[in-house]
Image (cartoon, rainbow, N blue to C red; front, side, top):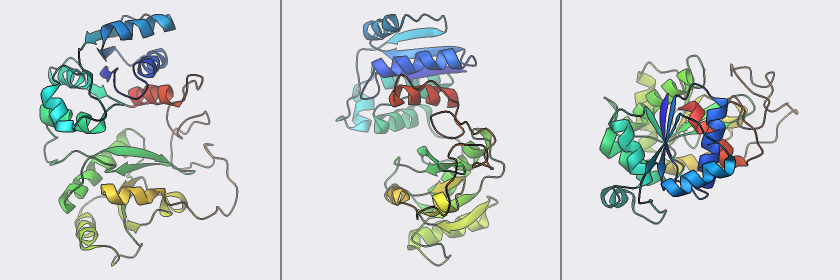
Length: 288
C-alpha cells in the first residue's frame, strides 16, 4: 500500500503526524511507500529528532498549509501547493493509493471530491467515524461531510458503511440502523421516514430505527445519521446491568480481532507512549 500523509495537517503537526508515521512504518510492513507532504525542512527535522530513516519515506515539499480558519473550497482553489492538496494530487496521478489527513476536514473533503470525484453511483462523499462499544466497533456515517443530504444520499452512505464494516473491520453481513427519535417504524421526521423506506426496500441488512442508547445496549455495525443527528449519538447510555471486561474477546463476540491493548477495540494495537494523537495517526495509516 502506498499512502500520502498530509504531514502539516492537525493541531500538533508536523510533530505528531511524523511520529505517527514512524510508528506506522515500524508496525505495518504492508506500507510499501509513505509520502509525507509539507515543509521539507520541518519534516526532516522531526525525523532527525526521532533518529528514524526508512527508504519507504519520500518527502514532497509544499509551501502552503490550509489553516483551520480557511474556507474549504477557497483553500483548495487558492492554496494549490498546500500539503493536503499535494497529497490528493499524488493519488490522482497514481503515485499513491490513499491519502490520510488529520487537518482541515472540509478542505480534505473538498480536495478529494474536486480532484478525485466520487465513486460511480455515489453522489456525495460521507465521513465515517468509528464508535467503539463494549460489544463491537460501529461505523457512524455521515459524521459531518454534508449539511443538506437527501434520503438517497443516506442510502448510499449505508452501502459504503456496510462495505467498510465488512471488508475493513471484518463483520459479516453488518447490521444497519437509522438514527431517529424512536425505535418504532413510524417515528421520525418526513426525511427520516423517506430514508427508512429506501433502506427497507434495499438488500442491506437493515434493522430499522435506533436511538443513541441502542449504540451501547443493542449495537449495530453501521449507524446512519445526518450531521445534526450524529450529535445525538453522544447521548449517554443507561447504566449497565452488570460489569463487563471492555476490550476483551469475551465481551466482543461479534468482532473477529478485538485487542485487549490500549486503543479502540478491534483496531491494531500500537504503543501508547507517544500520546493519543500520534497513536491515532498510526492507526489511521494501518486502516487505509
